[in-house]
Image (cartoon, rainbow, N blue to C red):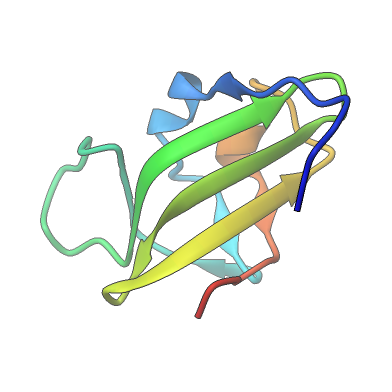
Length: 90
């Protein structure tokens, strides 16, 4: 898949995802190694935002399996509290 007309920036602000949900369920996050304990459910290793199209892609692991999370209608300020509906790559 080739993405044209999009400009993705690294999303470092998403480090504290305490308010974000995965398919409507609250989960414990490890964002790029920032974690209070080892009982996290989702580990994100990279995250990118297209501010113009208001979408973010988070790449990581859930239960040891790779996943791609896609958030729409988000900004740098709102992604940390977003509902991430996609569980791709399982």
